[in-house]
Length: 427
Ligand code: IMP
Picture 1 (cartoon, rainbow, N blue to C red):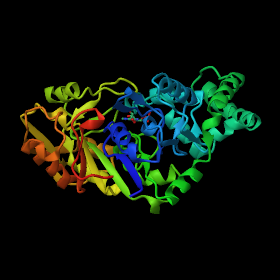
Picture 2: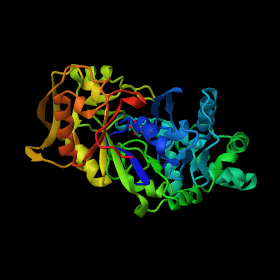
Picture 3: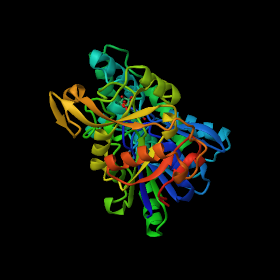
Picture 4: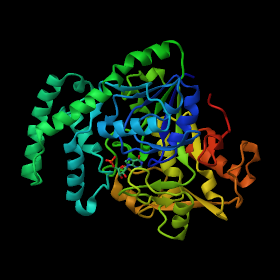
């Protein structure tokens, strides 16, 4: 089973960092394939606690090659900061590779991200303001600048001049702000280029070699399925695809090579930013989940919106990703609740529905229909074997398994590597 894709199955923050960190111990290569530094992947391991934003979570294994794939948009300043931070903690980044085809986040992207979201007023998406949307928009509009462009200063200058001219017109004429300086950006990005040059290469070649030797390759997703441009709550989404299908495009590995697609589900739901969330709880229960789960954004520190597990959304996620297995994360956060609710359907304008509507206005009107299960009301973080979980916890996991319609491989009961229970081992 050499190629394993790890996917966020809800609105992101499902605990991908921990699972990738664990699986990476057996992997030859780990590749991030989408998003940018809007992601914050938390890893707790013998090196310490880290919130990685661009570097793949396999970096803690000295033998593992970590690739930032072509599907990622890279803010070089953030990446260099992350490389230095890892170095200070004794973590080597000599095995870090950057696809020469990955697009760069430029200063006008971060500036425009803020200006554009502010201009949306009450309909703001609540982006992370990291420039992600504008950078992906430029990629598609063919105004992007790629990591490989930094390797040739003349090519870079010519490209930057063309693009900046256009961006400055928008900044000054539409948003009436000061233009950005070509020289400053050029000098700054040449320095970044010098620092990152040893890492920038054609990463598809090393992937092909690993696959030809049947080595384990992990494809690390970012964000979550419900933030996907097509299958998420558009327009309240991110700007790249967090789906399993995108892992092929964002790495340069053909879809026929993907063997196992692992969907990560929190045992409840959380969301940060705007847009509908049918099971959101604006009450004491929601506050309790937030406090027990320390549900505050890794990147922006914003409080996350919390609610019960939404099995309608979860099944939609399985459908559009083709999960072959699932991980249920943060089960321990529900330790204290006497009963637990699972949303098994929606009421929409007087009708019962069992699908996730495409329209956000329809989704906004959906009322969750709940099923109630008993809680276990005892700590479970010390448990390491599935059979030793309280019967109510197993009943909850097995009901989720039925509803999301794929087998559960892993159950997480705490933040550390050893808190991952292997119900049905993957590797
Ligand atoms: P953007 O990706 O910064 O454009 O933000 C678009 C939406 O996606 C906002 O609602 C963000 O809060 C959300 N978002 C982006 N990245 C993440 C993530 O890693 N976890 C959870 N939400 C995210």
